[in-house]
Image 1 (cartoon, rainbow, N blue to C red):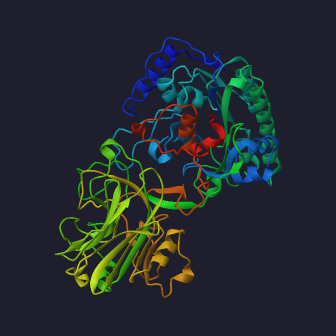
Image 2 (cartoon, helix red, strand yellow):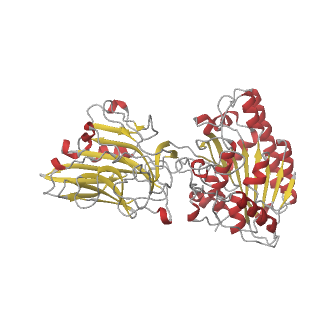
Image 3 (cartoon, rainbow, N blue to C red):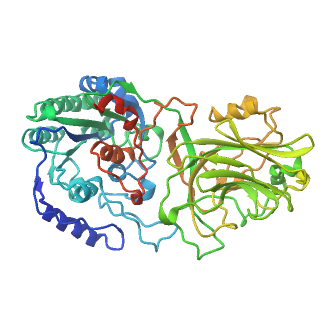
Length: 587
């Protein structure tokens, strides 16, 4: 079934959806555009996008099968068989993530209604709606024609209703025929395509290259893709068109099922192909971390719940053996961790001098304890004994999605208490005070990860934290740098290292951050937690080690079409193709 929308009809449909979603979404209406303009015809090179999802294609299994046309695409592609879907691998959730640029945790879509579910922590709050990529394109670049060919009717009628034309297909072969027809007769700026037979085969035979039925389905769809690419190259204006072909899957599968959060269910593949690209496989080490976003305080019901956050704070009294994490215990001390400061905007900007890791009841004056805190674009470490404090600045850290290793080392040098601070293994600051009494540098506050509700109540934080270590001795610079260049510490290195606290921060167990040092305290959490999987992009890692996730589809498409995304959209996707512009931007 074909649906055609001119711009007036698109505006009417969008308005109708907004009416259905009243109380569920908040975003601007598209402006009415009454022309039906086509691209091309002036001889200039036009950037265009062909986006194809092979639903249910497991990345690792596709690599084993390596069908003919996919193998050919790799020769001019940036690609990975290790891309990762969100924890929620249901069909509607995964498609919404690809088409909205935000994770399933944020958009809250669970089914084909494409209406976000309420926030469990604040059920009376109005859920935030995230418009689709085609809605955004229709408002910012209305002459960019969009076409959708999908097996799931709800993709056409609800998720991507803003397309200029949508086509329902009852089989993958019908999808192929319709896409070939669109490429031959239409002038798309972006075409979005859904194949589904591989998903059906996975449910019937198993999502594995060892299952003949699954392999046959993959090879059949690969043949359809070959025909589509042939039709693409046969376009009359192909020489003046610069196509980015994106081939991916919405989620994987395990045995004969999907929908959960196992790696096999989340494992996808992604190919970004352009005739000018040099072949490059993107491989990366993955980091699991806790995302701290918004704030939560069970004792202050008037606080706003932006999004869940987990922390250890004033509502849980400090444990007796948790005092081992006070500097006063040994007079020597090292704490290091990996942090990623997520981009913020407007009311979500970080509060000035907001702490995010420490053991300190207040970061004003000389309140006894210690903490890392963010001030503007820079970090600082705070240490005080109740009357004297030192605050060595650590310098700026990225707020655009890069991981950073931070460390603070406390020791006595020439009889003077001294704090040295490090960023990514390099010393960036030092402060000392002869009047600082390290034996009094202790706090009755519990060790806190994330938002400090007893210090700040006005603004949230948005950051990720993992691989937190505390030592009862001062590490030398070589040891600090060693931790900066790896994720995790082998068990064999625990003995004799002075390591007294090690929290990977990968997940919660019984609502606790588990300590890998046996017998030392686990740290209780409050509120809800959110585990985030991201690529390791620390400075010592190969810059081509890039983790691709479904949120990246939105931002990469906007980048390729040269349409500017807006900060207020709160997108979570990255842009990485700009790293390779020397290959495809011609002088």
